[in-house]
Amino acid sequence: MKDSTYCEEPPLAGIQSGLQALLNAQLLLGNEMLKMVRAPGGVIDSLSNMKLPTFKSCCDIPPPCWMPLSLGELCCQMPVGASGTICLVVTNGDFRAHTYDFVATGKSSAAVSFSTSSVTLGPKERVGVTATFTLPADDAEKDCRCIGSEVLIWVRGCRDHYLRWIVKEAATTSPCCAEIDVDDDPDYVLHWYDHFYTLRPCLGTTAGAASPVRGASP
Image (cartoon, rainbow, N blue to C red; front, top):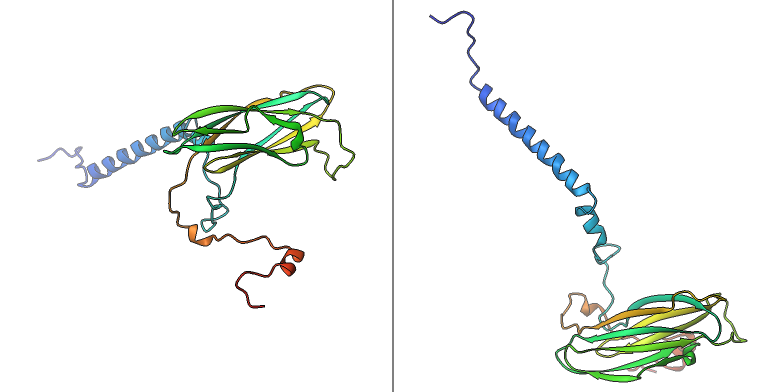
């Protein structure tokens, strides 16, 4: 005969206590993982430092591969007659040789000179070319912007790359010496969005009236 003070444990009590212990362990693990993710240098910081493509929606079409690639925008200031320099470090990422041309365009293009105007690079070769901007006196003709002198620096090889360089006139000189990496990598990938693009002329009102579309009936 069993002692009256003895109580039998229900059959499911062991399972319930095991499940409770497992749940507590999972909650503890989840809390520790959240601490790791939110910690400085954790996953969130790593994701924020990644250069991921930004699209407005999943249906946005990226720019076509044949459009010029931007190297960014460089702004500095210096007095009239002073000079600033940019070292363009060009790397040919292709498996064949390419000739690279260095050109300045824009209203202030005459103020820019290059250490060389053209160079040929073999596969995977690299070269540094210096662009020098000597700030001229203000022109009599100005547009509506107060941005100083502006020029586009073009590197034309397998693909076209451009840098927007803005120089403002000032009594003192801010750092006007930079090194820009130009990675000229070919694009051999057939993209899913390529069939959306076709080369179309930019027909303004006058040009459109004077130049009918080729193949169109008069």
